[in-house]
Length: 203
Image (cartoon, rainbow, N blue to C red):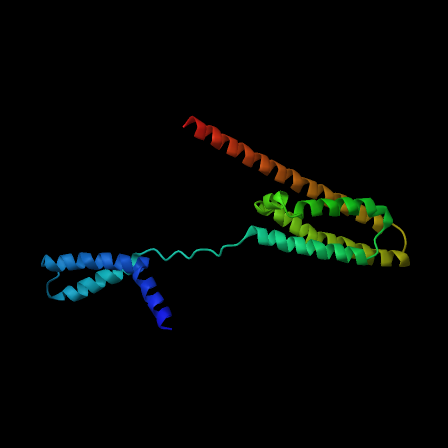
């Protein structure tokens, strides 16, 4: 407890408010020595200290150090659970190739290595992949199974299988866009590093 109290006291002494108040208090002390403050010098010094503490900017609280790679790791674990879920539900054989291609692309983006490291530096790509894996794909499967049950009772209209195939095509196109964006981001980084080396060579 004594250590915490000493830490708080040291933090106050080093705070912006105390430093600004002390600076203003020194001005008040100077006025007192110059004879300006007169008999009210304690009030002047205390008032200037208080004014300095009030006008000082607030202390900046550092944001917590979030690690982007942790989000990719959590997303990788959710992708594993998604594959387990897909292995337990009944899916149409006509969409087999689409499922295989989509899951293969997700897996390649999340595989530990330099691709996942690039992914971790692109929040928009992580968000898009997270939304697809955690929400879009499960909703597609669940909607297909529920619609298929109703379709047995009232057949007609566009088949649930066709809707699912279209949804998978759209998700695959989105994953391809994410992949292209990551490729461009890596190319930009390479160009930036080349320019840096060229500039360093000239200097």
